[in-house]
Structure formats: C-alpha cells, structure tokens
Length: 181
Length: 76
Ligand SMILES: [Zn+2]
Image 1 (cartoon, protein in one colour):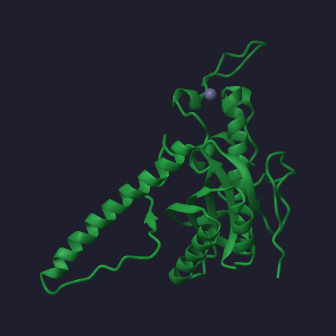
Image 2: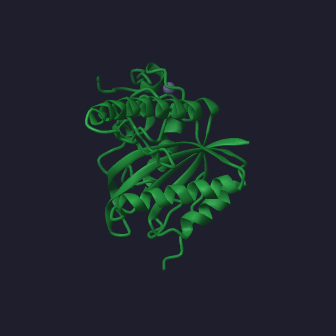
Image 3: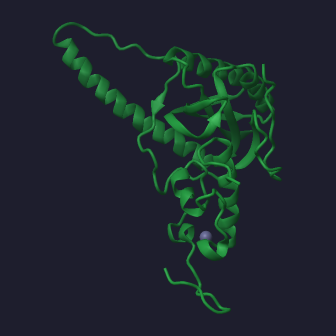
C-alpha cells in the first residue's frame, strides 16, 4: 500500500457544482479500487504559467489517498475521459507528508467549523439554522505558500500532459497524452 | 552575495540545508522561482550554491511544477 498525492487542474469555466462532481467521481473511482481518500485541499484558482487548451487560469485541487498503486491507471482513465480536468499529476508521498496534509485539512476544517458555528449561533438567534454537511469535505488551504511545511519526497507515478509535447523526455517523468477530441 | 573569481569560488550555502528542508516540494513554486532564470532555466549549482542532493531534488521539483503550469517551460 502506498500514499499518493494527486494535483489536478479544473477548467476555469467549470462552476462549483462541476468541481464537486469531479471530486466525487474521482473519490468513487479510488474507493471502488479499494483506496481511501483522506484529504482534499482546495488550492484555489490560479493563473497558469502558460496556457493549457487556451485557458489562462485553472482551479487547483490536491487529493490525498492511500491504496494500491494499481489504482493509478483507474485514476488516469477517469481524468482522460473527464473534460473538466485539463491537467493532473499523481505522485507518491511519504506517510508523514500524507499525514501532514490531513492535519492541515483538519485544522482548516475546524477553523471553518468554528466560523460556521459562530454564524449558526447568530442565525439561531433568529431561527434555527441547519448546516448541511457536504459529501466530500473540501477544505480551503490556510497558507498560500507555507515556507517550511508540506515538503514531500516525491516519486513520479504518472501524469497527463496534453497538447504541445513540451516536456523534455525527462527520465523519471512519464508523460501521457490525452487524445484530443 | 560576492562574485566568484579565480579558480576557487567561495563556497556558497545551500538554502534548503539552511532551512532544514528534507526534500524540495514542487508545490512551493514561489520558492522554486528563485532558482530559475528569467528564461525559465534552472540555475546551475555553482550559482545557486545548492548541495548536490538538493539540486537534484530541485531539478525534479521544477519539472513537476512546469508540468502543472506552476512554472513556465524554458522560453527559447
Ligand atoms: Zn542542501
């Protein structure tokens, strides 16, 4: 069993519902193969360093899961057939970094919860408010660029690069082209 | 920082070692930017001052960051 980190970019024109759908489907694909998604971090919308399929920005997510490496082809397949995802990369991470991501998410979640509770209390002053639990907990990352944390000893596993084959034939980087529709 | 001259350049210090960073993270791309030229090339070790181990990790991290459009590919 291994620990993995998926970084994925969702097309900027996809609405929040679409994000949820991608993440739910991805989670389902991983779970179906006996894997376990522990953490999803919302890395927010960012400007791309270069255009991908004419898009100048994209919404990044980090998904951490544990399981057999055989799940990876399943994930790749899922991404390949999912138009909303314009790029992804799967890397293996060390257990401590995997756990650190979960901790970070838990911290962010409790902060968000405290915030929600506050709001709930305020709302409850008027009437009872119910806070709906999202099926997949998406936690916004607290720090944009933490200096010394979250370092991962990474080994490439797979990634998809579409369009221009700009990636130099990097020894340890396996590239995989998506068939353009 | 002093300019190197002569055959024995002054030994530079690996900033990743100084910061006690065990492994270079491709997600910390703002930091990676310090080690690429304006054209997007990786700064050589003799300029960056990185130790061999961290330089190797850095090169890999930069490759990943480029794939994920966090850093540009080399222009020209
Ligand atoms: Zn070093």
